[in-house]
Length: 263
Image (tube, rainbow, N blue to C red; front, side, top):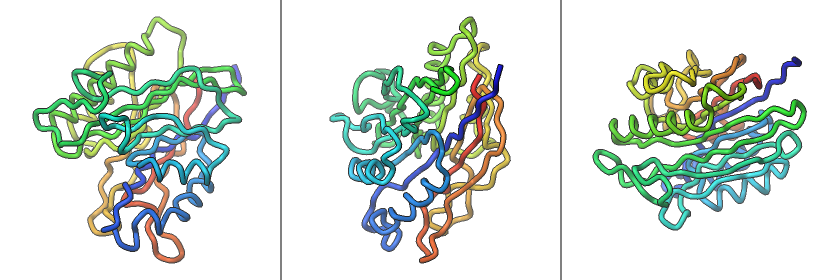
């Protein structure tokens, strides 16, 4: 069977904040769009996208279809949109679920040690036109405060994947992108990659070994908290972003990208 690979990327855009000064999204958005076009990933998972940020990217990247809703009670606020190349994929299914005990309730949270921020996962099932193969793509942003909330969120995503992709079915590539707000040695990442909950979907961190991704616009030592997990063979993972010629950062994160084979 002929091999087909795609480029997937996880991109924390840094929500638009005026107090970011020269690195506010309004100032760096042209550099963001330029870097996204330069990479030309087949599919992006974005985090921290407000509606006006998403609208800018849709205008700047017309070759992509954008999916997903906001995390708040009214489905507004920050999005975790998925964007895929229209000429490469057809959409088979779209859904959003909240990381909570009531995943179908907009704005719901776990509580406990979770921050005040609801957390959401955007899921797309796509058909790759050139190969005729299906792809499951999840994009999320775990809590930045609570270790318990992070573990519960990761477990919920793993359980969702187990329901969507049981072992008895024909092989299908699954990709999970996101800002997990934890470093690789954490219990949360071990849960994602060591298959602690189920025995039917084995995930690997395609970005393992890459350098730090969060740097706070250069204000802190970079730490790796952005990930791409997959059950498929992968190669060529990298960190991208950096500064524009004018000295503006791409984001307070770098983006990560991986070449992933379609099963």
